[in-house]
Image 1: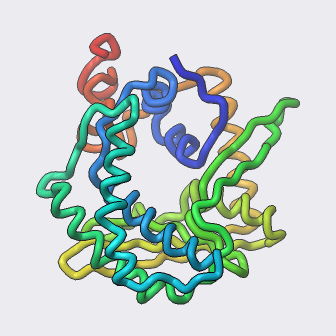
Image 2: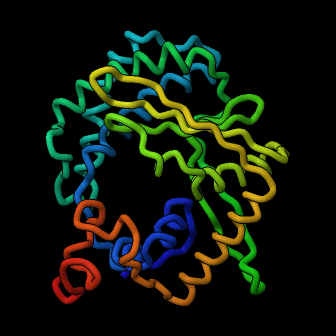
Length: 270
């Protein structure tokens, strides 16, 4: 049995979605199949990160060719790291997708991102670990950890995303992750309002860049504090309540659907 010792934006989001999913993932630690979609996204992130770290060191941004030449080695390294994890139980790819087609689709997106976005960026932090301590409202405290993809001079935060075909309206919404990043950057850079964006690298026959802008101000920070404290209280009370009334509660989107009593099975089948 595991134990949740700290929060993250993803854990807070998951708790809002379904407490039973959180229990199975973080407490029972039941392995999930590794997503090919996430493999693709991790490779894109890693190539962009490596290039921007060169800029932070005072070097020129690598050329599109240099960045695309780095893809095969990066792909292999990310793949091997995933398969080397103790909980690895196999891959899951979307219908019609494959490792070969995904790997081939990285290069055009990287070249497009390099020429249309990265040339204009003045990075301060890349893939930066951050944490905050928050009081729990009952005399105690807890920690929240996260990773920011990119913080630029002036305080602009960029979160790299990948998408297949198009960006859904749900993905464009102002979410917990945006509030969490803005919460930390506001304190770190003494900003009342933090400018943020999600930059989607859209994988399709004609790859494209799709950006969505956000602002995180005092109202959003207060909302994030409320959500974080509520999530922490729920964890302390072991209040992992299943919620079958969300989009995630389906065989398509939840790895644990077949063993959940609110899905297609029962917990005794684990």
